[in-house]
Length: 381
Ligand code: SF4
Ligand code: SF4
Image 1 (cartoon, rainbow, N blue to C red):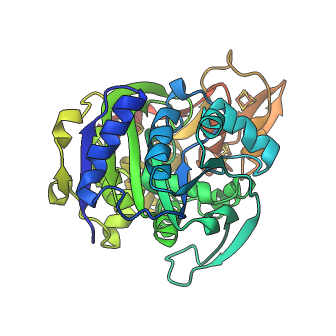
Image 2: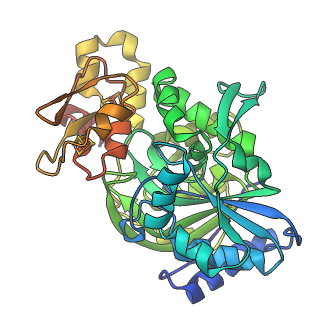
């Protein structure tokens, strides 16, 4: 069990700062000495949707460019890729490459290409806890090594998005809702995310925590300055340290709880081997979306009737109807068919909603948000 995590200052998104921070962050792991000339390395960034880098929803292009330069200077070929929600096709993903600043990296750097292989592969993974067979983005097979370059964010369903959640981008976009539908329980969904991270086993994980996202994450929250870069060879150890910066413990993050149960990490950052001053980067008033109490309530669900459970659980609401442009993306994304469009506004059926928060994640204007009842808020305190 590799438990080293480095946490270094990265004050701003400039190439000079990024190169220096990456050198320092990777030093405890031997830097990039494992990279040999001719290797193909996939940087699996978080490119969740059409968002500019300033929105803090995606891995910042300056950091991806700095890492790409370090890799190509060693003779490696870099492939930058992700499968966001939506179509896994060249026209759709090209627009995301452009919006997130990735196209410019390819243009400016020899040896760096954006993924244009949109084939889908079939994986068999008998050792998985839940995800024994799944379809995945086949370009990952081209990689001699995968670098998981995530963004630290809050997440409506899973409380936290970091290195482990980033590997859900290995599932082709249009197939993602099926997994939400088949694994509606947070703990089960966490297990499939851990299965994915363990299957693809990134050689290195890095987190963009210069600006994280707080509040209505993972796409419609607010950028929050943290000023750090994190690195580890263990995605779960990196996430444990990253969640700590937001004030979240392992018990409050389903993917971390799942990793702890499997013995992949300890339950406390105190048992990690940290290079750097983790506590210096903790943001004490980070606005999170805690999932822990909900999970506990659900696990005692037999004792509660459905009405009480519905009352206590988080659910998506059209919080900002004025922002809604009636695009129907939430309706199309909903795996449970719980949304009907009435007068170009979504109406959510509380009974059939499985609380996957895909609608909230993929609303392009942030009109949907996670709602917690007063009772749930009191219990979360
Ligand atoms: S309404 Fe939203 S949260 Fe509920 S099942 Fe549909 S997409 Fe998921
Ligand atoms: S995705 Fe957002 S903007 Fe589009 S219809 Fe749904 S709530 Fe409205």
